Image (cartoon, rainbow, N blue to C red; front, top):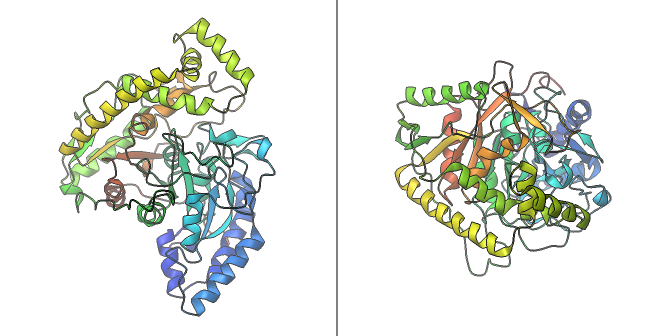
Length: 487
């Protein structure tokens, strides 16, 4: 029998509705697990024991009166520390915000709360949610529950680690550079990057607190132990911001097919300039074989019709100015000097150049982005989903002493730039496509590997449905060793 702590949020919600467990009992279970297991991984960095138990008791009283608080009635959850939570410290990993206690929830957090969720605490992130590893000067380093010498990823690393270790029922992550998808892959859980614009991002840090303008590229989305939970969460999260709710509503299309065999599947597993380690390739090849064994047709030659490197370069031009918008003037001055001396001859030069992108150059990149969006729309007239790697390598050993420009990763025995970690995720970010990261197996070392299921714009339910059906054939969530049998 599955341990309660590892049940999906969907299963936990049913258990509460059926009276098999109370919210108070469930919160108490997760609080005890956090106390005993969190020191190993440092995923949960702010905890509100008293508040969580108070919320749980209120949920139990409501149920006793026959009242439902919503689909997440009494479910204990944690929230990525990039999202503001009313009355609970929110830092985004930045010392300047170490005592920041918001008065209202971020828009996406509020939607979980309105559905009856119980917020227990916050999970760790890198400084300003801007790294593929999760560590900062306030809370330290978060470890991967599958191997504590390795990173759980970033920036939603604490979130994915907490879900994987059975410390929470559900999470809320954010993604501008693979920050939901990469940690989900490295920790062996499910994550969904929604189509851009369907989940309000207001209340996330960055930008600074109080900013109501929503940045390009960035989205909020769920991290969970099942694809069913992704759908449950997206149903709650998706919808217009109050500012626009007067004029429009959201009705996401149903999944395109009702079986793996009926899905028109494309696979993009290799690309020049986007190397994938053999340890990951072996697992992903197993997915293709499993699909074909189920009678599904998979086209491994399908491509969108444009150069991948050109698409990623466009993404960089759209991403870097957003990241650099909060840099101190001294840093910007230094980068201006680098841009002048280096041009685009090095990774640092490219980054420096993009931090000072003129608006007319951004408009040119945006025109190319829109052209690529139309090409993707044509592609998805022929195919329903595209399968590709989430990231080139399994979870990396902690590397936090060097700067991101100085860091390298090992791919098939060769040193590659640290920025390679963003490439497969970045291909789909600036074109606003929905992407589901689904666990599909492990390397010979026992490290989780995820696959990225990409779909047409606004057809999020197709990628989630495919991931759910795929999990019945290969992969799916499994608890990491050493976390079972605890209280």
